Length: 194
Image (cartoon, rainbow, N blue to C red; front, side, top):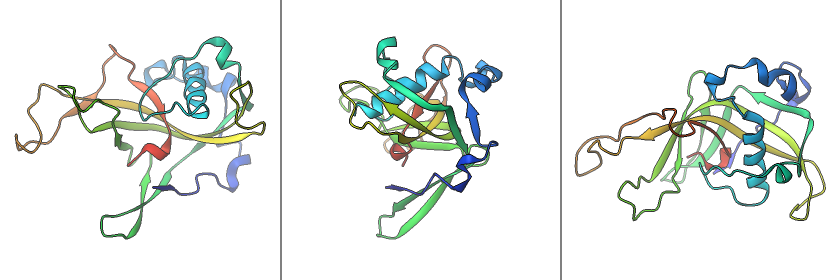
């Protein structure tokens, strides 16, 4: 799957910029912005180190977080994401993700298939589409230049394991938003979306 060009000529547009220190505190924690910056840096670091797997959260130490510098303490918001993909009959088509009108996505799960409650997909609602320019320093850095990374801020759906579903049960799977017992919000690489 190819990701259509997310970056555009509006990168310098102040309406699309989100200054980390000035604006993050204005958002309500109800929308997953509690510990937003440390969790975002954990996600970015995992991707830069090649430890990124769809939906798997990594927690870094404070020392590891210091290896990431966000350029100008800003990330950039986008209204929609266009995904290019090939259909089963080899046609090239495009799908659009928009947090206001078409926010729900799915990706391959990292669940162990031998588990009793294994499900092949994970589901989420996109709260925001962003890109950020980061500088990764340290001994595991692969580049000394600024790198642009796209990410989606998501609200996870949980799969109802007690609901009979699938081909044998003749019912679709049930999902709902994850409650407060586990972390309901996270970040994903747009390349994981199917």
